[in-house]
Image: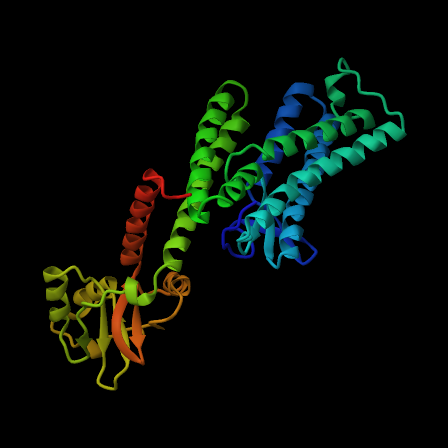
Length: 381
């Protein structure tokens, strides 16, 4: 499960169904898993029938994974949070939610919902086995019939659903158990600090899983790598969100900047680039319109037109502007979705500053250092 703000489906993913208004997709790498399963079973059994049985079992198992992710998604929907898609990967499923609930109790319920679906599936299978008096499979049965009998199929599916429920509840953020841990921590400290702490615990567990996987299963090693990077990414995203929530464009903007004019030659921009830290410039044309001159456009113009060219003769894109009171999360989103590296800040329609990604990241680094001092000083509770 993930709450990252992703597109409808991941890159290299293909939608094959839509359930409860949620796109269900499969990533292209899923084919590698099926191929590996088929090759492994064939080498063990030399039986085409066993290969088909193994693939059927894997597909059934991943249907359970979809139900697991739907458990998260539908519980989140109850709290007004939309899920864009569910994507099947070789290591499991990913539900692309708009966000996670801010209320720790709600987040805990959303996180627990997935493993509880696996428990429910196991209970249903167990009841079916009991009602139909299905005996456990013979452990000494021919390996060419790994899942050839209903008993082998059902008992294996029951066991793996229980394993999935238990494994997902390990307190390794951002797995389900890690989100439960984060929610529990968030009840006694600020949400972003709870995320950072849960991410550190998750990465510690990833190290343990990696070494266990080295001795027992390469799959554990793959999962541990995913947990390590996902925990770091979510911790960083949460820190960014927290930092931006505490500032306005007035605080984040560069107020001391050089404003160029359409009649200026490119040489002036080049001189300022060398003499100051400014690499991207707002340019005001004679009609009052604002345009953006990036370092990339500057160098391209120097190669094609020389340093004496006037700025108004260049095809400069309009400067995207935000109001000084606009939420910083929206400002960041606008910067990330435009081709220009800067965005202007206006106060009553007058340009008063510029913002680019570098000074936003600098702001976040300062905020992280401040939080580290607070946490080290015991001021988080």
